[in-house]
Image (cartoon, rainbow, N blue to C red):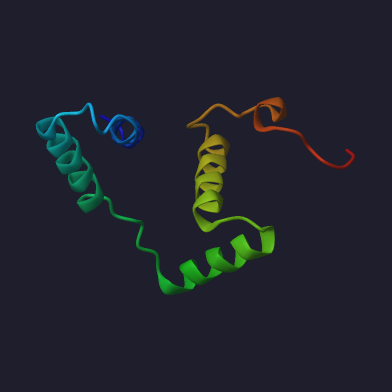
Amino acid sequence: MTRTDTADELEDAANRIADISRADLQIMLRRAALRLRNTEGIVLEHEVDEAITALAADLGMLKPDLLRRAVREWLETGGYLPVRDLDEVGEVDGNA
């Protein structure tokens, strides 16, 4: 089960809290707790973390979004992922 599936399941249970059994709720909460305990972030060297934080601020992006974008572009450049068309990403401002 993916993190999104777990979140969707918990949200659905919250929406119908009166209808869900205690046992089902316990199972969902235990599963969510396990996911939270087993989630680790990437540990970066101090200098690298500072550089990424500064770059994210310069670009007006959140750090996680910048990291996702950088890894994706690195994988595309290396041929590990197909290169996306600009139409897939969204609108582009400016002139070419």
